[in-house]
Image 1 (tube, helix red, strand yellow):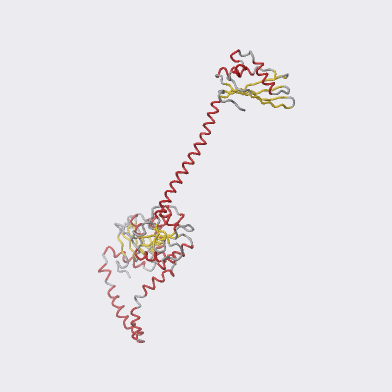
Image 2 (cartoon, rainbow, N blue to C red):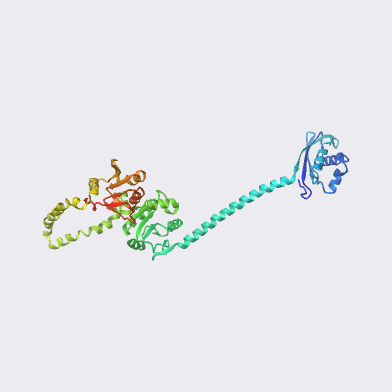
Length: 433
């Protein structure tokens, strides 16, 4: 029902009941007629309406089964006292038209409070929309700027224009990933020395880089990643291998997952042995096999007697080393290492490790494959580690974190940085053959 907002402070709500059928003009006539002279000249409804101090009287009636129910709304710009008197005057109406009737006031609403409530509710909605919009805009702006910087940082390397980070040319170590999206994801976390192989056919640019830089292959945790890794191991000199979690791709990893995967990288030789990628190492073995093959070539030139020559030459070569090796431990190995020399000798060929703590604690023997996990959990208090395996950067880092004094293994892998305070010895250092 329309109400003139310029004249309304309060709104009187009244309910009517009539014993018969009445219409709107009957109700309005009863309101004006039966209150006339009742409230005095100052509150005469006709005069108040002419002066605009009350608004249009709205009536709504419904007749049913010979009875009429309805409502009366009177907008008022009078003060609270005058409005209350006017409202009370409505309840004196006893007849509407020819019918008996009763009018009861249900309440007087402060229109301003109602409007304020509406304003507050709407303001909350508007503010929520503004905050949601500004937050989305903020995130979009940050992401847009970040992506723009990342795209700007990507460079093209080599004749194949491989996507790469800006530091690939200058750094001593690179990370080889599968595609452009992987390079972008690494750039997000600040890794700027990645280069993409762009498929299973490894470009010559990566092969050339692997000859002069330390290469870490960082591949997806699926079959595609395995295939790319196999080809990389065949055509490039890969030093370390890092893999995404099983079933995940490098491009979708979070910063924490990327850092964890790179922190847990494994020397390529150890990775090949552990996961049975033997065929991939064929070319490397062939290269090393060429060195001892030279004496055989000389023997073939001399003719058939060359088949008899090796038995004559072998005994004098093998006998002297046996005589020389025996005194070596006493002469070249310091006394404080002779105990560990015997332990390493007893572990050769077993792929096991002994963890030695201080005091009278009995050494603990474990399998080398469980060594890393065990050292992370129980490494505190360990003084010496002796094992039948390759000493890697990862093992040295764990030893340093746990305050170990000595690490002894068969040989060293690719070690970028030796931690201070950890002594490292190999089988050659301890004359263990």
